[in-house]
Image 1 (spheres, rainbow, N blue to C red):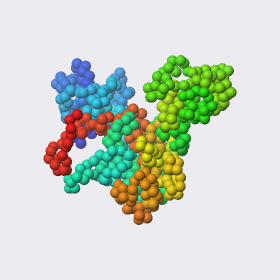
Image 2: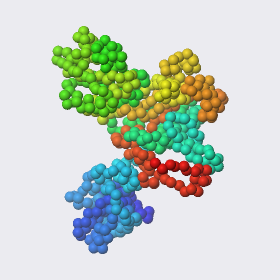
Image 3: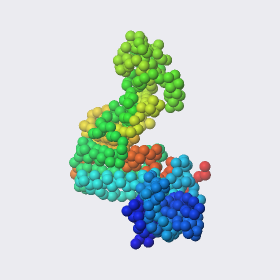
Image 4: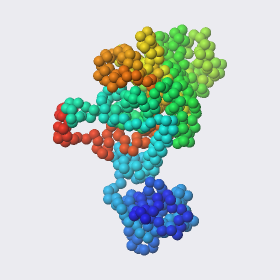
Length: 584
């Protein structure tokens, strides 16, 4: 017999009545009824009620055990009285009559918050006492789900012939879009390792090595600011790469994995499978973002050319986007939308309402010539009682602002169906963009293959060149980013030179790839869905921290372990570091 338990707390049933059993767990509740004391004992698997005999010493001992102490209980299983049956728990028909109860770990400190209680608790307090917070059913179940999802994903990848390979954690620093976490070297003074932002170069090198299909549940480290769907510090992704593969091959491999995972671990409907494909250009025009929430039925149309024919000066020579909403909206609604618009930097929010006779009513009606009003009805597919909102600015700002207005309208009108997942692929990203200084820069992944190859790089307007780059988006959250990789050394050098890198800089910053691509690299492609974000969606969590066992807070601090922390001078000397911190 196990010293502490013969059964888990969810295993006791009517079949065990009359048997002697032993369970172990935390004391969840104590109910002292005078002559009897009832205790609910909770382990990872469930809850079992135990009850004292009439022995006064047992009653006194059991009634004074601090809540959340860990105990082991031995006794006989018996059927509960009919009036005490608890249908809410699996063991609700039985209880254990205590013959022996032993405290294994006594709680001596005050609980910082109540466990398994619906009351709100400050997140900083929950993170400081994360080991207690994880005793709560919600977080515990999130961890169990996480384990099951990872196991399921692994099995699907292996069934497709992917080989799981672990890549290094200590590597070299390279420009990959975010700040690196640096680790100083003891043996090589003045030099640093970097924690990988992603296994990007390693997985491409595996393709050059002859590994045909690679995957891993990969930790990634980026020194980025936190937000609801992004954890600072580290996160995990399903990293995969395929040799001799095109964009279509990647889609065929990963799409069923994502679909099957969401289908198995959620009761929500998956609205669209196979996942629709939307070009980056169309997504920005129609939704104002490259991660559109397709549950939102609203979309934008471009009316820039139309307003060139009108007399409303704020719209002339501007990019004008419009959003149609069906149904009459109150004056109060318009006032609230105007307040939101000004809060995001807009000077105002123009709108028109369609009347019964298909005439317009609204602030800018008088600026639209009568002979063009029918044209507007047709362009926007307007019907009576519809309202159309207008957003005007330069093209980039109009796109961003209209996307925010679209989201706000949907939220205020309760248009989002919370019971579905709507996936899509965003494809055909631009290869380059202009940075804040007006210089050409990579817009997505610098290792991506340009559509049209070397010829496109040499002959097309750089801002017109598209890349074989793609994202998976679900309910407005980017789940993954991927690309067909640039495996040709000449195309690679040309692309980097256009972004301002010399061959020597490429060789210095990406030396392994530069060398490897000169040894017969096969074409390859991959993608990397974010596992934390997938779990956030599967659990309906408000923040990504709810699906991570020990997350950093929004300021990249571990309040439980006290990280980041100061270290001893001797430790700094070992890695050849002298601090020079100026007081603020």
